[in-house]
Image 1 (cartoon, rainbow, N blue to C red):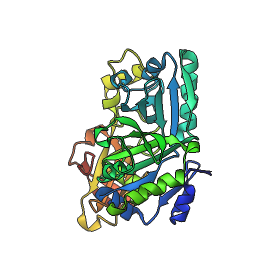
Image 2 (tube, rainbow, N blue to C red):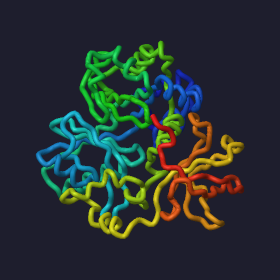
Image 3 (cartoon, rainbow, N blue to C red):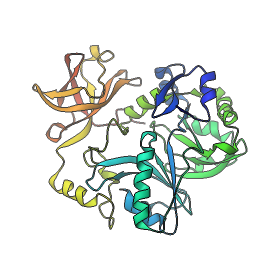
Length: 367
């Protein structure tokens, strides 16, 4: 397994380490629920250095990114970020990702498990496009996410740049511990939060990690693992590639129509997706919340569990958990379009029992 620049700090903190897409990553430190609740209440620190970073440069960089992604990259100026996705010609989702406009180039931040696939796809398209340079900087990039309502207050103690000026999906360049880094504000938890991108080889990585934890002591900041990251994003209805979408799903059924800009002149998958839009998708990704309050903490739906209506299978669960915030079972999954109205009752098979769930449009909590 690969190790991130913060691996030794995780081991020293007693983290439970797991193999996550080939990386030795902390799934939890003090416990998933405790870490989850801390992020909702104050702040937590996540090591997300396993993510992939790909720089797109050259004279045709903007036109190229516009062509290979769904969203309209011409709408973001330098210092802005954008949530988007890439699809194959048939509309199947390759990956969802972030695009950062860095001035003379763009940086695409892709999912760890998809990096090699994404990179190969991007390089293939670039070879035909021309005027584009591709650089994989994943292994040299350290990435820390500080998330929670106190995150800005904590990080402001460590940098001279005014973080109050960093709006949602914006970025700024600044220093922490004398290390130049990109400080962005996107997040995967539903809370205010910041991402710190920098060159790992030119920094005291463990020193930066510990400095953030020291600065946040008054707010009881602590490291958080992949487990809490997953429950936090699910409460907000945020998708996870490999669970809630893959190459067999398309952005329209996955609820990503809002980032699919058909008014663009062209993009990969446009023709297929236009046909899907005209005919309508057969299924849609939606949310579910358990109805029986007595079973709310015990009947937990998981990926792959069957969703039925009147004894007939209408879909499958893609993600499910016990929501630490709501203290009840929640899930997302694809079901036949005609059953997606909010409030409809469906059944999810959990350990051989059919449990009643109400169709609930995500997010499950409002921040």
